[in-house]
Structures are given as structure tokens and as C-alpha cells.
Length: 321
Image 1 (tube, rainbow, N blue to C red):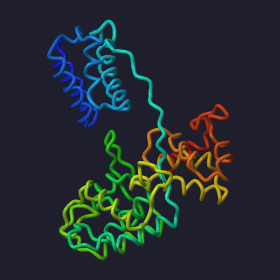
Image 2 (cartoon, rainbow, N blue to C red):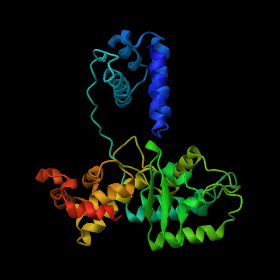
Image 3 (cartoon, rainbow, N blue to C red):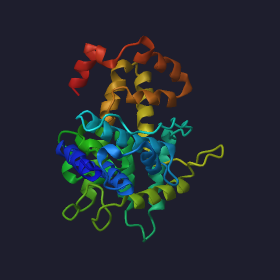
Image 4 (tube, rainbow, N blue to C red):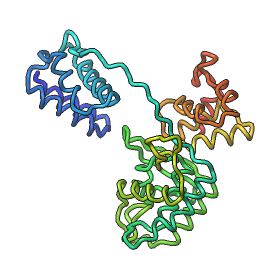
């Protein structure tokens, strides 16, 4: 079997399971185009390393492509097509020093209020009401920017106070509840704009789909208008994506203040955010205010060498979400 044929078969199998597999498939085809249509068993570690060591390739990208190719060869090795995996030595992971920005509640209010000024120019394709409601939606649900932009009118069920979120990874779809405050804001937004020509729930003035690059530039302008900056000479300024992290941290601190059972709520937060692992939300513990951090970390199941799945009460709670 040749490399081209094996990649085509592998990608088709992935897509038969309902995966888009677009970026991964494109990376595998790029690898095959560089190496050539040679027999699968004749691929060498040097050829793989040459593909991975591309110009301006970060360590995280290098490792992601490494694992992609490794899984591809493991698939064929498990089927007797390879005796050994022709993989080079993997790079060690780089130390991540980036810390997401957690907006204060006052800063969130300044962002929402600043949309009227930042979107006042005639050239702005998105009006201030749409931008303000969109940002409020991100903060109130922790949804990703792309998830909010893809949301159609049918995905918003205000009768049952639920929103359907279409994720990008593995075609995951989740249906999440929303609070009464967000319900009222979304209802007022729907009542204030014509709906007959809009393809998406959040749309431009002319009803067209909002471009992710455009909304990103709009947020950068809004952040400057609102006077929100990261100090201490940091290169990375607060992002729109940080509203997701802010949502998680604010929920954790609210639950702690209310005496909530965080052993239950942490994995529930992961499920609400559409994260794969039930413990994914634990990383937000390090972002909570210092006065809560010690108490929150003590609740981590790793400290007691247990897993979330070992708690039947918790599993029953999650099943009822």
C-alpha cells in the first residue's frame, strides 16, 4: 500500500465516524506530498522530521503534527502493515507562560457600555446593539466566539430557556440552559431587529453573517475605547476569548461564596463549557482570587487520589443536566 492510498483510506474512515477531519486530513496530505507516493513501509524518521521541522513552526504545532502522524502509523501498525513506527524523537513540550486575562465585573460593564461609542462609525457593519448582546452572550455562557457567530435563530429556544451550541471539534453539539437575565436580553435583541432576512442569530446590519476577523477588530477597538489594558509590559492584551475564562472564574467564586458543592459543580462547569474531560475546569482554580484559591484547590480529586467518576452522586447529578 502506498502512502497516498493509506492516507486516503485513513481519512475516509475518520469521516465515516462523523468527523470533519479537514485540518488533520490536509496536514496528512501535505506530509504525503512532501515525501512522495512511496510504499507505506519505506517512510523513514528523517522524512517525518523534515516535514515537522518546517519554517516558523512552534513547538505546540510541531507536537500536534507529530501526534497526528504517529496515530496514523499506529493505525496501520495495528493492522499488520508496519513492523515498527518510523517516528523521530518527539520534542519536549514548551513551558507555557501565557495567562488568560480575567475581566473584573466593572470591566465587563465598561465593555458593554463602550459598544455604543466603538460601533458609532458609519463604516461599522455591525451595530452596537448586536455587538453588546453578542459580548453579553459570551460572558453569560462561556461560549467560544465561533460558537456564538455560528448560532442560528433556531438554536435559541427562549420558550424553554435553552441554547444549542455547535462546537467545532468532533461535531459536538450541546444544549445548555440560560438564566432569566440573559433570556430578557436576548428577547429584547430579537424584538429590536428584523428577523426575516437574517441567516444567523447575530448578524450585520444588512443581515449578512458576521466575519470572525471583523468582530475581532471591533473588539480590539472596543477594548481601547474602554481603557482596558494588561499592565506590566505584557505583549498580549486582553482578548475577546478571555470572556470565556472570565465566565468560568466568576462562576467558581460565586459558587464558593454561596457555599456550593464544588466537587459537583467543577465537572458540571466542564460539561457546560463543552470540554472533553470532566476535570478540565480545574485549571480555572489557579485563576481565582487568592483568598479563595487554597480552599478551592483542596477540593481537587487529585489531592485525594480519586476521580470524579468514582462519586456515584456526582455522576447522577451530571446525568440530570
